Amino acid sequence: MHYPILSFDGMYKESGYIHLFGHIHSVPYYKLPRHSYNVGTDVNNYTPIHIDKCIELAMSNNGELYNKDLLK
Image 1 (cartoon, rainbow, N blue to C red):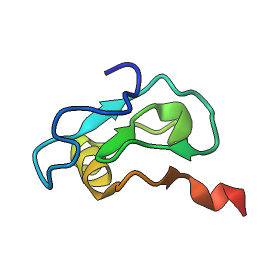
Image 2: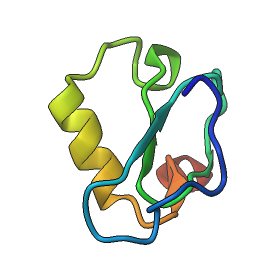
Image 3: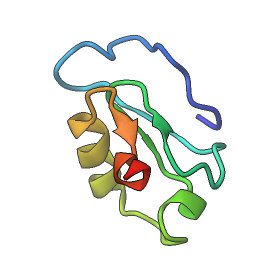
Image 4: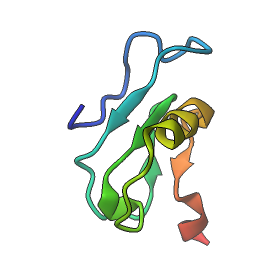
């Protein structure tokens, strides 16, 4: 998807459903929906990320704050 969505079918299942998106540009931290990941290069050190890594990062996300280390 282009935009992040807050709720999607299967987001609370343990496998098989992820949400990859872009659109959020240069925002240092924000909360991501569970099993989702922002694939935009501007929030990933301007580096493309392999799809396998995107899937891994999405599946490991439990709806936590993205880049929470920047709050320190």
